[in-house]
Amino acid sequence: MYPSQWSSGLCDCTSDMSNCCMTCWCPCITFGQIAEIVDRGTTLNTACPVYGTIYSILLLLVGFQWVFSCMYRSRMRQQYMLPKEPCNDCLVHYCCEQCALCQEYRELKHRGYNMLIGKHNISLLIFISNSRFY
Image 1: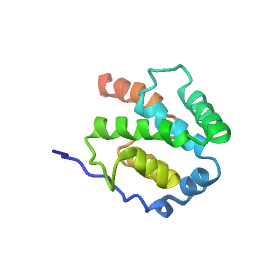
Image 2 (image 1 turned 180 degrees about the vertical axis):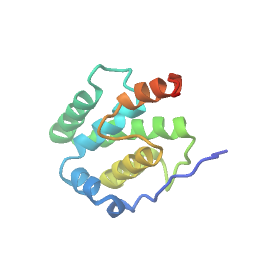
Image 3 (image 1 turned 90 degrees about the vertical axis):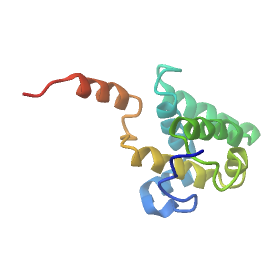
Image 4 (image 1 turned 180 degrees about the horizontal axis):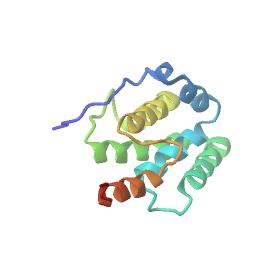
């Protein structure tokens, strides 16, 4: 049913120490990067800053940022046909928010996305595939 597997485990956060630290101290940035790529840059013109801000507001005002971020884990799993591991997406984000964000970040990075340029990866890949090098 799930032909693809996660490239790393939920608790492998320290395998990318810079992302681990960024997500620990400022998860809104990691979430914004993930959301922009999962949405393929089509939802909002400036998806990363907008989604990062929404995440921050939910975190600081009501503490329900995990509801917002679990929706993106579900979308990402559907796009890449990944299994629900180790359990339901919302439960993963509720119990292990930073670990889940780190895992999603690593997964997108493993799939070839440059997390610093976000949605522009898609435009770049289309340009390269349509170009002919002689």
